[in-house]
Image (cartoon, rainbow, N blue to C red; front, side):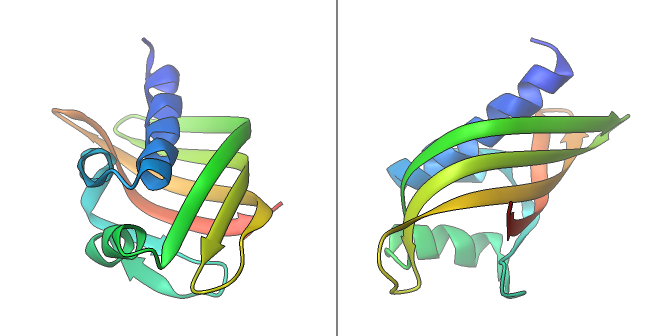
Length: 122
C-alpha cells in the first residue's frame, strides 16, 4: 500500500469508527493533540470528540465517500475528503450533509495520525 492509499484508508477508518462508535479505532487514527473544528468554529479536543460520539451527542449513521484528495510533504500531509454523511448531531434531527473534512496529518514511526480536522460543507 502506498502512502496515498494509507491516508485514504485512515480517512475511511475514521468514519467507520464514528459510525460504529468504536473508540479503539478512533484512538488509532487520531493523534494525541487532535482537534476537530466544527462548521460553527467550535473546537473539540480528541477526548471530547470521542466522548461525544460515545454518548450520542454526535451520531453518525452512514458515509458515502465521494472524493478523497491527498497532498504529502515528507512526514506531513493534508487530506481533503468529501462524503455524503447521514448523522444527528448536538440534539438535532437526523439529516444528510455533503460534509468536507480538511485533515492535517503527521507520520511517525507507527504510521499516519490525524492532528486536525476542519469540517465544512461542499
